[in-house]
Length: 603
Image (cartoon, rainbow, N blue to C red; front, top):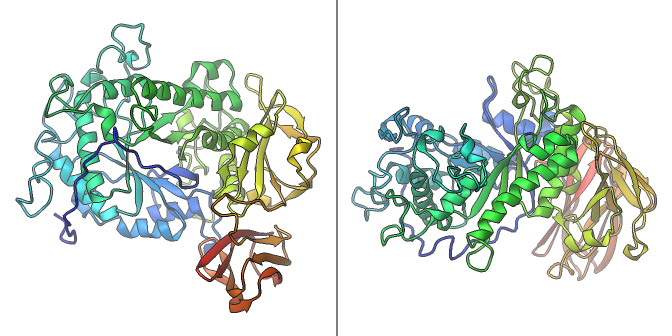
């Protein structure tokens, strides 16, 4: 046991996810899977994802991560081995992370063979009691190795991880029974998956549900604010099997010892979507069809949840995560792929996911794992960066998807999707669009002409805002804004559109919500700017104020006001920014007990 680990007695939950799922209302975050890249530390990988301006690293707009903390690694190196790394992530603005739990040490791996070909990959002693009343000086039963692993891990990383996925892709299979429909008698809709058809577990589904149950009890005991997720599912039939079975090893039957089916033991529906494998996308290989293919996958999971009562009435609805998605930068065989289609897919998916109610999306992957010219598989070319092997931070190159991801983050970080105003857009046929309200109170619109043809990102159209929306001058940002920091100006009429999304931001400040109508607002004009900008704010009452400009990591670069008394009313302060390097900065206004943050782009 790690000598630095101190155990605390917590209250065990008296509820399940059939009783309550805590609402998740944090702003959408642009995420990435981590992975392993030779010669790079996890801290360096986090820097090139989130950015580190002090070292000239722009990043690609990623501010939530999906790493793993397997038991075999933690048992060997100590449970606190990655605590400093997670603290460093937080210093880069990375938060709300998702971690998947798996990988028992050899001593704690099950010795059972549920099929003749392979030993189970799950933990030993899953059916030992979870708790033992502190018999061995720990709150959990030391002989339940999975409970021990989860308790020690969550105790160390509490507050640094929001979502805990239980096992990565437990339904990964080479069997056709996973993707066949209910009309096939042996499909997973009708029969539980055979252990030999599940190479990531080699165990009955009831044993996987048992791990969900243990994780739910332990994690909710240690950190009630954390969420428990299924581990990135790919097949709706596997979800149905979870929801129709208990953790009873005797066929998943309901008994006094096994009273709840699997849906009671997770808050979050986490899924993986690679739309290139969808039949509809094989027939029309463009970015809009790829987005629809991903949403179709989500809908299949949603249908299962609702059919099993997770509709907000019988049982609470689940929170949603999309923890792996992308398409290749190059077409292989009959699959979708290409530089333009990948970039467009990522942009469109990130905004459509917010409309669909997905809390976070994690791109796969951080970087290509092959070179463009010699790659033989699409999964080698799904990075936000080109291949980073044998390169340093100054030598790496973001892909089009990485650049587009950062552009979205720069303009829309912290923004909230606005359903009602999106309806008001009255979009014509062939045009797609969504409305967001930025954190500093501007309406932002993401618009594009829908791609219609197979293997083509060519599309054209135009859009005029309805007069009733009273849209004036707009700032226009393109997918490569993060590279050139170029902002165009346009009116709200006859805006030309292509298959590549644009972001339009109104200059007018809006009321953020009923709760924040009286909130102080701070903004800069012009923004972006290269030499001088004017910081504006309005005080509803006279008060002492501090006004600072900080870099993206929070470091102070300009003290404009330092606890100065300012009268009620509107204020304009001219600020020289000519010495600041290009990038995104924070404008932070503190008055009384309130703090307001806005953004400044220096060109």
